[in-house]
Image (cartoon, rainbow, N blue to C red; front, side):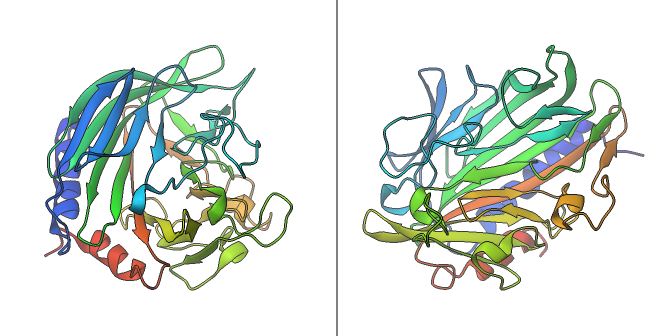
Length: 328
């Protein structure tokens, strides 16, 4: 018998909490979540970590995202103007977010006329503690604001003894308004646009100050379209070498996922874009997914913000802890 949605959500939440707390080096940081100016502000031990912005924009996002030494880990534009070194391209790349360019044939990734949006519907939970939690429900809307489907987004926030911070980013997509087709697109799902200092190439297309590595050992621009359990970008920000990794949970669709990871700083965990990542060798809809009416699909990721490069931060070990937490 299929699990009810409420039971499924409880089990996912329990597993995520175990994953968050079972890691050996988790410190007892105090996380607070408070509403400030129609945003949810997340602080760790009194320092700003991030804010969940869920009103007034075409889709929710997290910004700013501050790592070790309060380093800004993601691009500020277009949310904040005038930050030196930032290129004004792709205005829909807002820090950390999720979306999909082919939802029942509609574009919920880019913005403007003829595009859809992801609209906040309900704030289910906003709580602090050793792990901070935000749970929100959204409607995915077509260009004429018809509801295509819904999601429940769960965000958890914490820190460890090494000074690293993490965000567990989970999206439970539900075909709440009929059969849901998620197409094979290169722009789809959970993404970040990194600080320009972490770019592999700068806006002049010269070698940048950033570096990248994935779990398969591929580096820099070679990450694009490859399947990997994790990717990590790092570089110098405000005099410190810091990085941000994304972990793909083993239970996710087509794990290890393929990555739309660009040298200019867009990094997307995208299990849908198989045709694009094969450079046309696979069928145009090879990555297409159909979710039957009232059925769900769950996606789980962790953003891990750390000091140092991938080796010194032991990203492979941190991923292993994340992926196996709750198995014992």
